[in-house]
Image (tube, rainbow, N blue to C red; front, side, top):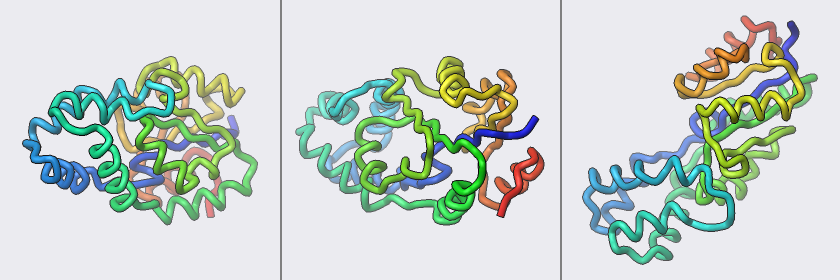
Length: 202
């Protein structure tokens, strides 16, 4: 069956955020133990990816845990996101070439409000015909329902779709559903895997 839809994860595939440096600088700025800071971030992050609305809920919950000024934490964190943020230029250029082909191009991403602030500033979603975000849907990968929504939104059969993600556990469910999957490592490997699935690449 011919491939008609190609779906990309965003973080770790199209854009790279240097979380190690960001979190290290945040801990130093606000005198936080790095291990404690990591535990609290992990406590709230996944829920933050399902909350819709213009608010910094994630940062506010972390601020409450440590008794910090949430506004100061928000501002410093957002500026760090802007500074330690990179496009994957090679994949970006590849996407531009795909745009001219007869595919539906889509993104499927776990994200939260503060990440969206920076992503929207750089126009990352302009590359796609369809954008599905965990914050809009109220669920995140690898929940099966998010992939069912993807299939319905694209109006294609699972076999006509390729989903690309840098995390293997986000690929297990769609693979079981019959969606073609590619674990992203680098552009060369991505192109080779697309060719194996019958997608001509430039």
